[in-house]
Amino acid sequence: MDIVSKFTIASDEGLHNLFVLKEAQIRGMYKDSVKKEQLDKYMKQQLDEKEAINDLNNLSTQMATVYINNTPAGYAIMRQSVSRPEVLTNQKVINYSVFYIMPEHDHDETRNSLWNKCLSVTQRYDAIWIELLQTDPLIPFLESCGFKIQEQSQMKPFDKDSYILIRRRNND
Image (cartoon, rainbow, N blue to C red; front, side, top):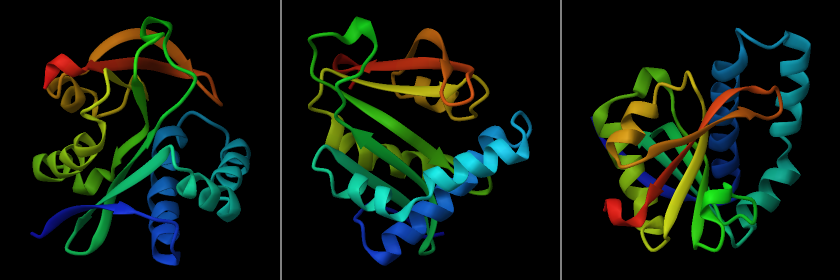
């Protein structure tokens, strides 16, 4: 099995891969807890090509995609963001707005490949933070990478129970 993680740009291929992965992620997160009409409306908003191009071309955003045998298997989006957990005020932080691996490809090698690619960008920050649904299967993996649950929250837009996890630089 050939596993490689690469940075992704707003090319036709990059956008196609983003949309395939993002749709799988969102449907997996909400299919059993959100009405189909609400989910379809949200999906349409999230899969807007112009918005995705602007997002990926933003200098404060980077996307990494993990491939298995040249097929996209997961992705992460890292953002420098003004909004952050209060405990991180006045620190140099970055947000993983997404860290997702398709369930059929969720293996140690896949997770580690994507994690190491992300870490190559984020290791210079004081802290990394991410918000995940409390049912996300990647929470134990992220905890093994040094993330700690900081607080419980409600994830937008459907106000589902979530955790804010933080990894501080001294966890390297």
